[in-house]
Image (cartoon, one colour):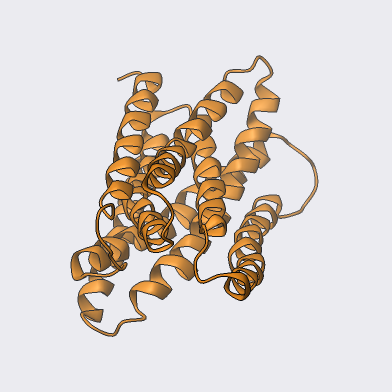
Length: 255
């Protein structure tokens, strides 16, 4: 399969996962929970952790080495750290302030910050996938994205439903969120096909680094922290998490 067709298939599957996950909460009140969802999230946490540490960061370092900057500085790790801090600031700093202001004014409100955090992460991850030039390397990122896209969209849908906003806006928001990753894939693919190979390497190095930071953040502070907050089935959850991580390690042999 040609890498372009792989990316087209990825776009279709990611949109489908996002729309289906986001539409499930429509029509009734739900909470984010359930053993099946917890096990799936644990697996996704391991996949994100493995993809960030064993694929995105090494790929970013390799690209920075290709640039021959002649500076002994950990650019990939620094940018990954900035990506981590970016999502942290949006979710744990700005979000807390925004939530407090909303609660002071009214009982419910559009969960804008959650949508913003998920959308930014989706675009960065999508651009990283779009910048890949081989199916194997792109497959790693695709697995990480698809493993979490449905549950992330489901969580957004639950928050939208519980915010008591109208159904039409919920549907539009879920669809808009679902196309954020494909939008990133398209942008990354365009950047990967620009004439200057050096500029393309710069983009890939930077966005692989940013994606690594956001993947690690999502894995540790979003998924793993939430999954193990409930002490039930902790050994099973740990097993799913480890399996996801080892799957990424296995793929790294061929990537």
